[in-house]
Amino acid sequence: MRLTYLAQRRELDAAYPLRVRDVVGFGLDRETSFLRRRTPEQRARLERALAEAGIAALAERPFRELSEGQQQRVLLARVHAAQADLAVLDEPTSAMDGAAEREAWALLARLRDETGLALVVITHAQALARAHADRVLVLDRDARSVVSGPPEDVVATALPLAARGAVNDEVPHDA
Image (cartoon, rainbow, N blue to C red; front, side, top):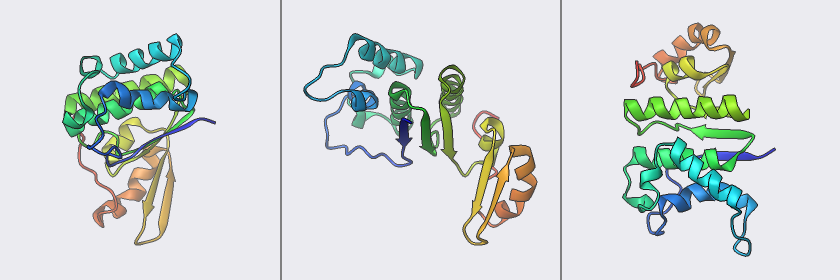
C-alpha cells in the first residue's frame, strides 16, 4: 500500500529555494533517486498534477513566496502526483478562500473516484465532514469518547462535543 501525508503545518523550510514544480515532484520521489531521472510518464504525471490543481502557472515560482492557501494547493498537487492508495490530510483547506476550497474538494473527489484513492481527512469543521465524508470519526479527548459512523448519524451525537469545543460546526466558505 502506498501512503501519502499532507501535514497541517508547512513542513518545508522556507530557507530551501524550492520551486512549486520541485515540491509537487516530491510526490514522485519514492520512484526516483538522484541517480535515476524521471521518466516521460512521471514528468507527464507531474504536469497533470500541476494543471489539475490549478497551479500550472505557478510552477516556476518559489514555494516560499506563495500565500498559505497557494502552498496548500501545491501540497494537494503533490498528493495527486504521488498516486498513492491512501492519503492522510490534516486540515487540507484551512488557509484557502471559498473558491479555492471548493476546487480542492472537487480535485480530491475526482482523485477518489478516478483512482480509488482512500482519503482520511482530519478536520474540526463538521460541515465539511458532512459534505464530503462517507464515514466520520469524532474524537473527544476530554470525555475520552469516540463516535463513528455515517455523517448524518454522527452529527446528533457529536453536537454535545461541539458545545465543549471538540469540533467546529462553522459553515464552510462555500455554503
